[in-house]
Amino acid sequence: MTEHDEARIGPNAILQVAAALRALEGDEVARQCFDAAGLAEWLDRPPEAMVPESTVAALHQQVRLQLGPDRARRVMLDAGERTGAYVLSNRIPAPVRTLLRLLPPVLAGPLLLKAISQHAWTFVGSGQLSIQRGQPCLLDLAHNPVIAGEQANEPVCHWHAAAFEHLFRALVHAESSIREVRCAAAGDEGCRFELRYR
Image (cartoon, rainbow, N blue to C red; front, side):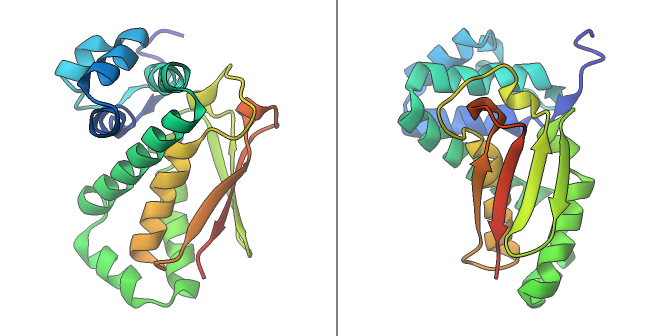
């Protein structure tokens, strides 16, 4: 598969990691991570279109390698929140935001889940996201390309979790929470997130 055939992910998976690295770790560490991922040019000239999923994987994995678990977790959570904030402001029309905020969580939650499911490819590339409604709601991500080939002692998909949590807190219920309880990087069959929003 060439870069042109490869599945793609939205550029915020790169842009917001750069912003989080600079804010929390400084420019030198940000450049170290981008250099190690082979993406130095994107730190100076950020991508404006969808990017190959392998480049997202390379950067996210280098953040974890260069910073270690605790610092990387902080950076990726911040990057996920920034991504959620961008999507909220730029990808969800104002009338839809207003409607979701006016509806009770029992109605707003399923509507937002449907929208996430329809646009999941912008977050997961060639991965497959499936949703099981309930308490908690389960979001299962199979073949997550962002952590392909990675090994960890605990779940590491903080960027995904924080992005989704930000959207639910802003649009459904302020105390919404999402937690990754299984992770392919930690040896599980796939990545599973538990979502509670009411």
